Length: 184
Image (cartoon, rainbow, N blue to C red):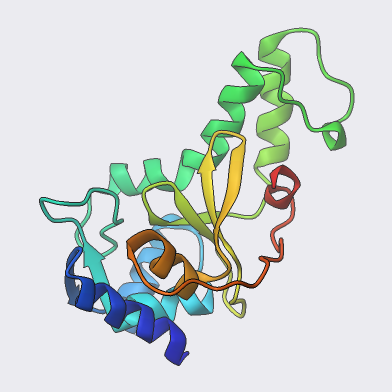
């Protein structure tokens, strides 16, 4: 995936974060086993080319090699926790979940049960996400803040250019991830 490796090279040229050697196959296996997901193919290729980590100017890169496990778990849980927040404090209710229960605890219980089955989103940077899944690539990058979810790039390479500077795609993103695409 040359365009994804180009995205890592673009980060290096912009000097917007510190890049460390890319993750090895063993490191990918450890992360995926520890957190129960597999990286999408383009996300894997990007992180194999170079692992961006935070420096004094940026905050938000997940450090899959040496990061705090609790912080990585928080980042992985962020999308579902945001939906639960909107179920509890706002009027969010997915009609596919059936009739909306009358009490907040009942609503949260039903929502949690259904959210356990939605596709896992994996952080790219801060609250920018790609879906998990070996054998998949080319998904748009989603900006996820509770149920305020928008496209932030046609794909991973386009996202890097949009977020950190560079030519951006004029193509329209295509929603690919069940459940999450319903918010776009």
